Length: 509
Image 1 (tube, helix red, strand yellow):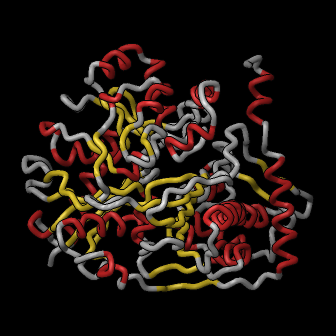
Image 2 (image 1 turned 45 degrees about the vertical axis):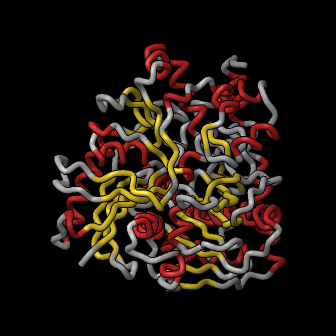
């Protein structure tokens, strides 16, 4: 049997999955990696640990089905997106640990950028908004805080790449010195021109980042970027032929190939994307314009995106930091033991608020507490917070895209939460549908890699593979929904200006 392999490198773990021609999972392996919380608001990953884990999960997934390199027709890579690291392509030496997408240390860089340009001008070039979420501010911070790194970057000795860049560089072998990223990932740097899909000199000048220190931008699929290092751990040459940022990969894996098709991924964060087709459109409601996918020789497809920083990681926080539960499934059990949230609302603005608010000064709160509240109500409020945040984005997308979304396709680990999915359908007032294959991020990367080498004929060939498994339909009254949304809005309002007040108390302007 022949397989397509997807290497799915996420915020908390790395997975390798082998898919057959029917798009079914034949084998998988997964390993978590360490989260380095260096300071409040700072998060880092060790790229070498991620690469080591990648080798282990690839090897394990192949061993489970006794596959050799000859059995793998191609490899697709999908990755946590804005997370950025610095390394030397000539030696492979890591010059700075990966600064994770959730990290806020670029906040002051963004403040300085706001003094140099307008949001309208910035968005017209990048499709994005002012936020330390994106890679550019993290790169700029590294350059400002390490003079030797800045010198070597200007000399072309150091490259700043997202995780896909580093993994492909490592897969192909450092001797080949291939440093690339695809257009979906490049659109998250805040350095790429969203129309031309090339690095934008205006944006590079704003952040003072040298062009020679960035990867080459390539299509998401339709091109073989190279073959795996035959002298490396695989001991064989497998084409590496697809790259998609994780959320665009999920959109692709959900077969949202047409304008108006939408998906929401409930993972560490939560990301709702709607395909807007080949037309380039800009948001007036706090959404991002991003590249959905690009095929070599064809026009790119675009998407509107709303990003939420904290979703699944909130469940981990309840388990690990508050120790309210011993396991993630216990959150669901407690949430279902009560009929509602008991007036408790939680806004998990641990890294500020993302779309549609874009307020890095916000911090998390639990509001509406009374003596009646129990940990069951807190668990239910935690799950409901993800659904509320998704509704904020859903409403903005419908307004901006001028379309009516008739259903929402969902994926990610939190879709296993029945109370969350039921509440999500109630808030959106449309069916929420989960497919048979829920590993849609990995599936999207596999589809991209398989299409490139002809394993699948075309997009129509893979569209027929999408099949529904579960469906949740709304049952809540409009009056009850509006009441809950009213209290959610009040809770959100109370999160704002918190970090600014903290800076004032420390005497920092």
